[in-house]
Image (tube, rainbow, N blue to C red):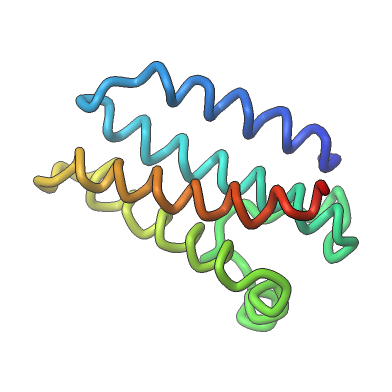
Length: 122
């Protein structure tokens, strides 16, 4: 996918997240993960670090060396995406208490990714 397309998807997902209520914590966490992944992919494509056909799907699916290489480019965004992904088992697939707070954390992590990756568009 091209950087512009990733940007479009991320923006659409983020607009949709704005329509969720606090009871929709599963959707908020899942949406934050998807939007963050799109933003990071666009960022890496713009920087020429990855090709359009080499998108990150999940950080935990990357090889160790590839994860390290991408962390050298933007460690803060990669760590934030990984942290959002770590919320999913307990609060999207599971029913742990604290889902609202986890969704707020996911939103904060997405904001970090959005801020970091928007710099490559300037």
